[in-house]
Image (cartoon, rainbow, N blue to C red; front, side, top):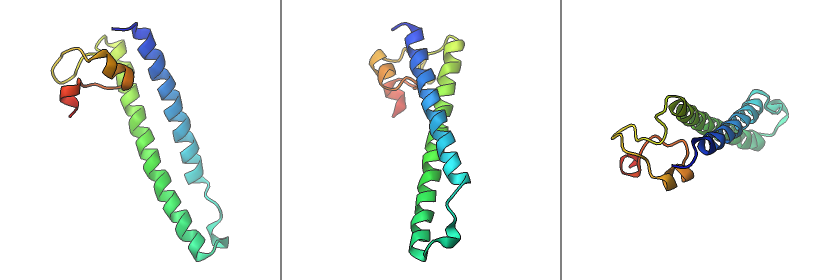
Length: 108
């Protein structure tokens, strides 16, 4: 397996990206435009946009959970091992999805 620090660095970068995304989306949700001044059509578009932002927020929060779990596995010395079967996770899979907890067989 590649140097564990390489994976840790990649995970820390992902963590920062997810956190920045969460902060930005949360700010947009918390400070919407003044909807009283919008026309009805504009309000419908704004409502749709808010729903999309909420979905993106949930996705980013879940990504952050996965990354934090992977960082925990690094600290516990279990990173790169499938949590289902205990086999080593293929290095190509770890490069593609560094936060994965499963080998390709058990990810399905």
